Length: 468
Ligand code: NAD
Image (cartoon, rainbow, N blue to C red; front, side):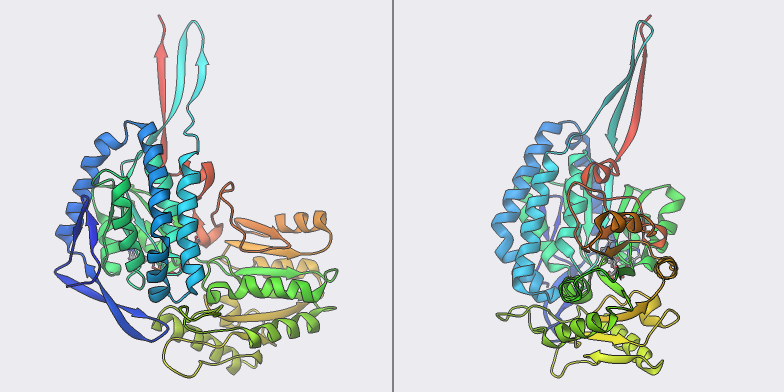
């Protein structure tokens, strides 16, 4: 019997089996989540299909319901935030902040327009263009920001008139299960269900004949599998996948100030951010200063259990990821990289890895070429701008990238040369509700957020009426 329950057809439901959920700060299982059976998934899908029949009809009611979701999330933020910290590892303030962010996102989404257009209206014809919902959406989320990434899907999907079955990561199912429970007060039964289980459950969702769209956030490897699984039924997919974001620091900046900002953009959430700075390129003129400043910040970073006061960086979320970061850092060391801070696991229980900064490393080494998704940053000098842009773009990834310079116009021009979904200037990580978010190349298909994210949960219908 698990400690948390799924929400299916508006009811709280346990599983016949359960999965252990580990607190990464202790390395110990601290709670269980239900492991949904196929029959339970079918029930969630049937309820979503049934609820869709009426949910799709009244836009005003949907907007009101999203407002109620915002209020319910806000009220439950301390409780859900604490669960999030225990299962994910992030500091408590960040856990609560993520839930509050989700509440705010519900509120903002409630006000987005669902636009219809008149394309022609004359003696002959009236032609209108409408945005219609797709039906039942399967939402599949990763373990780094389980709440906010789910809300980026739930809020626009529901506003557009779809219903949704959400499956969180098996590493962090509890906060989403609690969110599912909390949101039932704001939504009719079946409109939003949360089921938990392993990767196999995700596959069942992608195969399920009731589902018309998959909205997925996670790794490139899983994204490719999902597209393949969804293809025979021509399910729509939005894939928000991994990144290997470059930050390029030009020689005209204040190196100390930029080092602080870049450090935060690389190590926030212990480096487990899809759009974290994952490769740092610095003009050789200021390279030694930036390198030593970033290394000093890494040495001084307060790492620990997210529930402890003053902790800024938590553990790596799970054992496989912890092992992966260890392996990539070891591989860099073996290839001759110089470690300026960290470089190893930390003593004690839990999946703690020292914030790590390495130099004497280049493309061709795994820590540079692959997405490390953890607290280890390669810092590399450059002397030629064209060359560094080529290095920055020489990857299958294309999520984000940044240019750091005191010349804003030049920075914006250079940012346009980055092959990625978001090019930042003098900042990184900054995601806003009024711009689309998505990746180029292997970093994704489609967009989330703003009117573009809402459009992704709709399809166009033309109504073409002859007047005579
Ligand atoms: P993952 O791909 O391993 O898992 C993500 C989700 O997919 C989990 O819920 C998992 O159970 C499910 N899943 C696994 N196999 C499946 C299958 N065959 N069919 C259907 N579902 C399946 O990713 P992760 O390790 O949880 O997350 C880390 C990755 O997510 C990183 O690459 C990171 O960059 C990426 N990410 C991207 C964004 C973005 O918006 N672009 C945001 C956050 C994280």
